[in-house]
Image (cartoon, rainbow, N blue to C red; front, side):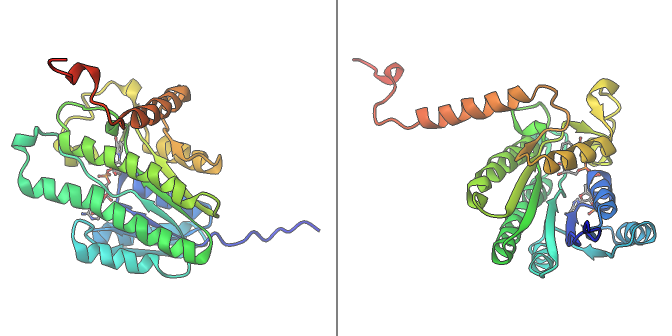
Length: 269
Ligand SMILES: NC(=O)c1ccc[n+]([C@@H]2O[C@H](COP(=O)([O-])OP(=O)(O)OC[C@H]3O[C@@H](n4cnc5c(N)ncnc54)[C@H](OP(=O)(O)O)[C@@H]3O)[C@@H](O)[C@H]2O)c1
């Protein structure tokens, strides 16, 4: 007789679940049967989303209010990750500011690095420590297409997402030969409030043909996870470009190490 009772997938923690990509992740994971812990700063929104998820799906959904640009907020979420029921972490919270470096207040730079880099790193560690102890679990880090090359107006944001790319790719070797999974998701331009946070009007200025819906982004990302991808780029049509980039940068890494100064620096002979 076929087994019709599928195992409970556990609890998914979604950071930045009060809007945009994180909110849709929470909804799609609830539909897959995960219990959900929604993390962000805006408590009322989180509670409303949690209530909505509980009413639509046969799952638990809880709000966990935390400012992840503060060490205390990271500790709050880190402690929740350590609980036995957590099987999936979506490290999604992040923000951008569309400004030249010289026009960006120090406080904004500090918060951006704290959230996009420090919190993501510490929560990734907490997840892998907990999942290793348990023998399974999945970590998903949200990077960005903006992390591949300098783009005007987002010097700090682009660099934080370059960090997420390298950092998350580096974790693959730590989970090799285990039941742990690490997925890096690289959205392009996606409809969200994040564009308003970055500096109003930027989304409207983009051609519709390059802006993805939030739903399509998350569905593609989850499809990539189901397909076993380590890197998922929802809007990249030609996957071979990603492979070529990985091959090129791996070769460049090797070529960077040589005891001999390059010929062009051998001044005077
Ligand atoms: N939209 C795009 O085009 C795009 C493209 C590539 C990558 N991404 C990435 O996708 C992720 C989600 O962004 P989004 O576009 O969906 O933007 P969004 O709608 O503004 O969502 C950002 C989420 O992060 C939360 N957040 C912000 N600061 C926080 C803090 N200090 N502590 C805890 N939570 C915080 C926000 O909630 P509270 O304000 O309630 O705290 C919100 O839930 C980000 O990492 C972003 O870089 C977005």
